[in-house]
Length: 430
Image (cartoon, rainbow, N blue to C red; front, side):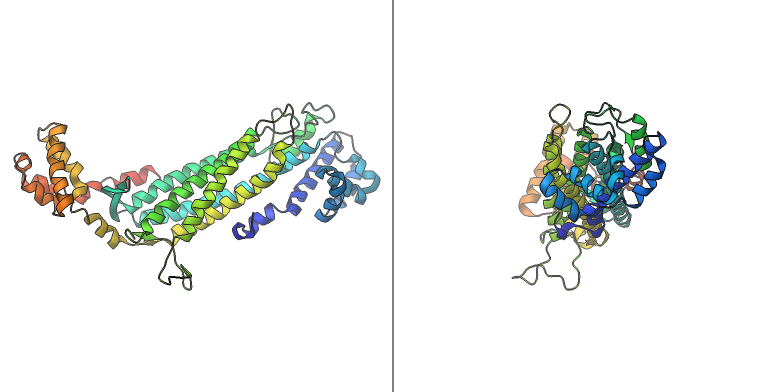
């Protein structure tokens, strides 16, 4: 991933140096397991461990000739160890090393993303509670519908991202799988006890069965989970982008001192962070498709998935980390305008209470069709003339014969729409 979207923490976890550290640790653990089984002299294990170091530069030099990264890795080690190198990688195939070390790295990366999600959840919780009773208009199809609160709007996202935290935790557990089972997974030249020892030390569980590789449905599930989280981040970003439109202006993303919105128009305050997140979500969805394409490999494996994963796994996780950090900042410092929300709510001249009037007329004895016709007649007049909806209803004999002025006025009470806010918040854990 380009530096613009890469936090130093993710850059370190996906660095070549960190990848090699994970591979070296695995080779050392295999040595320990084989020494326990009496296959390697214990004194040699300690001597090897002291000199088990390689540099990316030297591996690249060797790989330019071998065109095989694991062989280059092993030859670079052999240069340092000499004859003792014969004890390394015994009975293993390249994917034993690559898949298991990759799983260990993905567990570390997943822990970072889970922490990111916790940060976003905290920011959403604070803002949702702060605006629990900040009344605003709810919109369906982009059109004014009925009143809601800004807190309820944010509580929907809080609930959604709680589900994502559980999904990512499940995907992390699913990815925490290693295999040390040899060329086609039969343990022909390495004992299952070695696999059990190594996986336990790495905090992984052995794959119940494997071929030359761990099955790629696990990786597809992991990346699909990242893409799904990205889709909800886009949903949140799109919501804020709409609320920031000049015609709406009920909320806007932070705009700091010295920030500029346009090279041509000094007045501009654009939702650039939310727009960026919406764009990056498209990449995550593309990575999910690539991960699914990796599931179908020839027989016990081919290598068509490898080049794809070298790109999509670092990129997808790094991008999601950036997106979560960005949206946490946006939500935490979101500029909210309750007065504007109230102004927009009142722009419809009371039309947003039409559903309540409809139900009141039905309770008074009219059929739904009759009541709908009465209410819609006054509603269309209000749309065309801008006259208050309640006043038009109060002059309609079809309405006044069934509803008293007090009953009609009660239909326009905002409190009806906020009376269950506390209960809803409790249901989502706020």
